[in-house]
Length: 347
Picture (cartoon, rainbow, N blue to C red):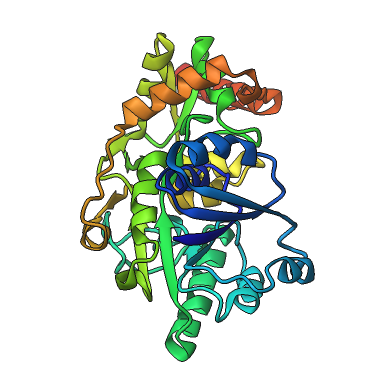
């Protein structure tokens, strides 16, 4: 298979790139090359071929020159967030690929959900998050091209996919989830949205890669939208308890309403919580398993979290401090404690 990825070295796509190269395929990457060196071992291991196209995908004329004369079995764009970027992709790859894969998002499914069981037939509508609405618009644009012109589109909807560089967290700041790990490790109270009992689905990126590669070059996936997630459902309390267990410490959880968190912070908790993580979701992956019969997610949530914690603690570059978020957590927790004490004093 001859594939081209726009991006190709992010949280989701790095595992896919590795899997393709280990299976002996040819992979072209359009990116700035900052993490491409990590793929050399995979290419050597499986006999795959890695071809780097150093370019800014936003410079369409330059990319068009560098792609002149090339065609591909599959093209996937991992960094398209708005419709104009997909319009550019269409101009670049119309008639030059047997399949174009767009990475959308499971956050595009309706919020609030009418049924916690989510399938590809669940309506798309998210009034809380512009990111999700942009993904919906991208899907609609591409499916129109498929219906009217036969543009060979496959839409993939990931849910919460993570890798070894970051633990999953519902409430975090701009610098990612290490600040949450640090608070747990230091015995500080940690904020969990809601009462922590809503069900969530975590998918380790190596599991996601199995499903994604199975859809590549798959004639039955053309014109289809397919979600790729684990079948395991865990509560947010279990997720945070797993982080604490991997650290070997006790968890001190403080449960706070998602609406309150959104109203008293500058972070995008309307989108990230109300439009996503505060909702119970259980994914029905039967469609994926029909298209990719051997797909099975094998990394349990507690196992993936332990892998991430161990990696983060041994790699200082993953330990990004976030004093602003840390201070905000303390302020929220102190305010809730003060409100409780004031109410009790007034009995």
